[in-house]
Amino acid sequence: MTVASDRHRGRKPGAHIAVTGVSHRFRRNATYALTDVDFEIQPCEAVALVGRSGCGKSTLLHIMSGLTAPTKGEIRLDGALVKGPSPECVVMFQQPHLFPWMTVAQSVGLGLKFAGRPKKEIEARVHELLALVELDGYEKRNVQELSGGQQQRVALARSLAVHPEVLFLDEPFSALDLVTRRALQQDVRRIASEIGITLVIVTHDIPEAVTMADRAIVMAPNPGRIFDIVPIDLDDADRSERSAAAQAAQERLQKSFEGASGRSVELAAARLAGVETLRLAAAGQR
Ligand SMILES: Nc1ncnc2c1ncn2[C@@H]1O[C@H](COP(=O)(O)OP(=O)(O)O)[C@@H](O)[C@H]1O
Ligand SMILES: [Mg+2]
Image (cartoon, protein in one colour):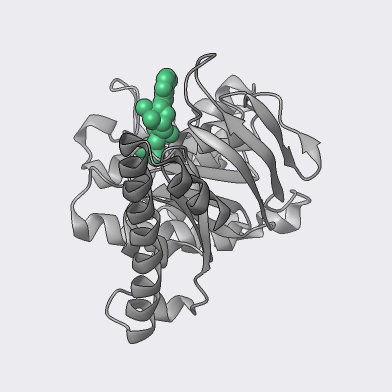
C-alpha cells in the first residue's frame, strides 16, 4: 500500500512521549483531576489509557496532545517540550466532526488545503488515504450519505493526511455498533503499524484495549492517577476476542481495572467516615 511507504519518504516515525510529574486541577483550590502522572511511550507503540469514567483519562489525553496545559509537570515529544497543539499530534474524538456540506475528498484534504499544498498533491494523497481506510471510490460522496463507521474512517483519513507522529483517540468508536467498532479497532492498529505512528487510545472498554494496545495504563479516580501498567503482549492474530490468549489478557486487565475502581470506593468511604489513617495506609501501598 502506498501510504505504508511514508516511513521511507524521510518522514519521521512515531514520536517518543515522556510524561513527567503531571498533576492537573481545573481551578485553584479544586481537587486534583490528575496527580503525579509519570510514564513513557516508545516510538510507534500503541498505549491504552484505561479506567472508569471520571478518572482523568480525557484530561491526560488533552494534556499530552497540547490542548490543555498541565498545572504541574511536562510532556515531551522526542525530547521537545509540548507547549500547545501541533500538527505532529492529532486527536480523534467520539464524534467525527465532519462538515456536512463537504464531499469525502474535500473532508480528507482539508488540512492539506489549509497548508497550501498543490491541488494535484492533495488529490494523490486523498486517494492513497482512502485506500488505507478502505473507502476507495468514495471521493465524490457527500459525508452525510455515509454510515457512522464510514464517517469515522473519513475523520481518520483526515487526521492522517498531515503525517502526524502521534494519533490520540478519545473513545472514538463508542457511538458505533459492535461489529463496526471491532473492524475499526483492528484497522486503526493495522494502519498505525503500517505507517509507523504512535497511538494513544482512551477507553473504558477492556476488549478494545486488548485489540488495540501493546500496553494498558490503568487509572484510578479521586484523584486521577496511574494505578497499574499492564503489558498486552499478543501477536496481532491473537488479538481477536475469541482467542484464548486475548481472553486471558482481558481477564488480567479486568482484574486490574476492578482493583483500580474498588480501592477508590474504599478510599471514598474512608474519607466520608473521616478515617484518615486508612487513606494514608492506602496511599502508602502505591
Ligand atoms: N473542563 C473541566 N472543568 C472542570 N472539571 C473538569 C473538566 N473536565 C474534566 N473535569 C473533571 O476532571 C475529572 C476527570 O475528568 P475526565 O478527564 O473527563 O475523566 P474521564 O475521561 O476518565 O472520564 C472529573 O472529575 C471531571 O469532572
Ligand atoms: Mg473521557
